[in-house]
Image (cartoon, rainbow, N blue to C red; front, side, top):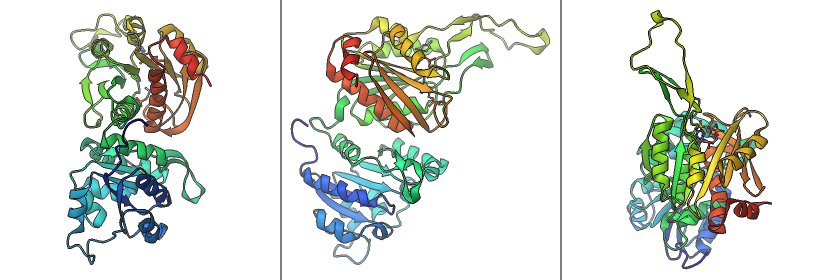
Length: 418
Ligand code: PMT
């Protein structure tokens, strides 16, 4: 990192809730203190079943607080909340997330996050079944809409010998997110000040006023990319066909058809540093959509199709020096070969090969598994994990391209080859 550490002299409230990942919060505490932050630890009762409070008291800047009652301060949550520069909750259990989302303050930590105007970073950790439950996802979406930064969990070994998505994010990633939230040189991460355009969702191509051709894209992967880019400091324009929630600060352009998406993406891309086409753009549309509802009584219509504009290929033709272009390739057969062919055909820096027939990957899942292919032949495999973690892996590759400078995509790709 160059320049002053944004964590230096900042007051961080570190909330620890009751999950096995509480032991990793010990390392997080140490890293925050080492970076110069003043760390005030708050543990829930359940957290103390996993890690003793003495451990945190010994490492942090102040002794652990656990209760609203009985301490030296009459109203500890307001003092903590008002003085904090940032509140970080790691690990955050489903119970904590639910209480916070619904304004229920039943312990010192939930009272503190409700009593603060400082930014809050929530790092969930739980079993996959709980992480994927609609209640947890809805609560997180609500928190994101209110500006809470969510550092998504990773895939890996969980308590009880299980494996899946739900493991606490790496301490490095959490520290990076906290720095990004606090601002300052380098703070907003590798995409600070970069304009990033992301497309998401499946386009809808009308046949008549009530019918359309579309696909199974939910927009989850594209929205995760937009959220992650914003968290990493980018100025984000999201061109989407869906109503899914987005992080605070993301500019949203709602579109339906490939033609509308083309117009919105090309216009936003004109001064963008990065464009990521995660949308499933229909390849064909009705040549002459009916202006009135087609009637069954008139028999089966002759539907004549024509190709839609290839937005990514057009972006490749218009590419500005230094602009990084990323395509996705949704395939079911010969996935990497076909994806690599698109890399050249569309003139882009990176193609994210997405085997949409693989279990848990592709359309509408909360998880994904991809291979990120560089124009110079390099590739990075991202095994089954959350779409948020895939988004961060794609943006890591984008950041590498950006730091390689305004040279041709082949050169950039070559540098990435591993
Ligand atoms: O939205 P989710 O439910 O989360 O699912 C995510 C996803 C499977 C949609 C996503 O991960 C993905 O793979 N997106 C690309 C889907 C796709 O259209 O792939 P393609 O191989 O047909 O297109 C290749 C690339 O060209 C894509 O970047 C696409 O956005 C772009 N394209 C395609 C056609 C077209 N007319 N214009 C384009 O720009």
